[in-house]
Length: 279
Image (cartoon, rainbow, N blue to C red):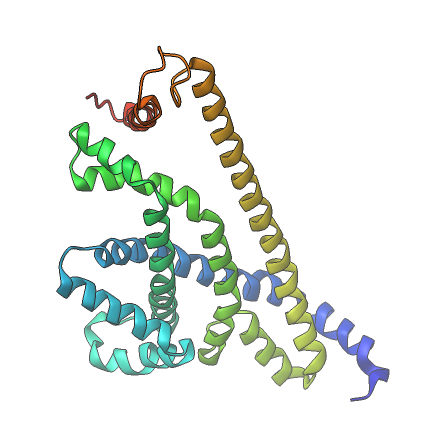
C-alpha cells in the first residue's frame, strides 16, 4: 500500500459517497438491527414462557429450537432463509431483505429468550404468590406483575443485544441488502479503493456502537443505584415503623416474616392499582 495516497483517497471516498454511506447504508443497518431486536423480543418472550412450561414435550421442543439457533453460525442461517426457505415456502413470496430480517429476528429470539427467562426467574417468587392470593390467574400474574419487573431487570442486556445486532447485520451484506458493508462493496468496486473505504466504514460502526455501549453501561449503573437506594429506603422505613425483626409492635415473634409478606402484598397491590383490581 502506498501511504502517499492515503489521505487523498480518504477525502475522495468521503466527499464522493458520504451521503450514500450515511443516509442509506447506516439507515438500513440501524433499521435491520431494530427490527431484528424488536421481533426477537416478541418471539423471545413467547419462547421464554414456553421454556418454563410444565409440559416436558414443550420444554424439549423449545430447548431444541434454542440450541439449534445458538449452536449454528448466523451466516449459515442467513443462507438457509434466503436461498432454501423461499423454495420450501414459495407462497410467502418474501423478498431477500425480508427473508434476511426474518433470519436475524429468529437468531435474536434464541438469545433474547434466555435473557428474558433469566429476568423472569430473577423476580422474587413471593410476587407470584401474592398475585395469586389476590385472585389473579397465572397468566395475569405473569403479564401484570412478573414481566414488568423482569423487563426492567433486563433492559441493559437488551441494549447490548441491539449493539451486537448492529454489528451482525454486516453478515447480511452477502446478499446486498444496502447496509454499510454493502456500501463498502459498491464503493470499492467503483473506485478500487479498499483500505480507506473499510476504514471509514469501521469508524462509522465504532461511532455508533461505542456511545451506545457507554449509554447502556450508564443506564445499567443508574438502575443498580436506584434499586440499591430503594431497598435501603424500604429497610429504613420498615425499621422506623417498628415492624421488622421484633423492633416495636410489642416485640411480636416472627414480625420480620409478617413485614416481608406485607411488603410483597403492598407491592402487588400497587401494581394492580393501574388495572382497577382489588383484593
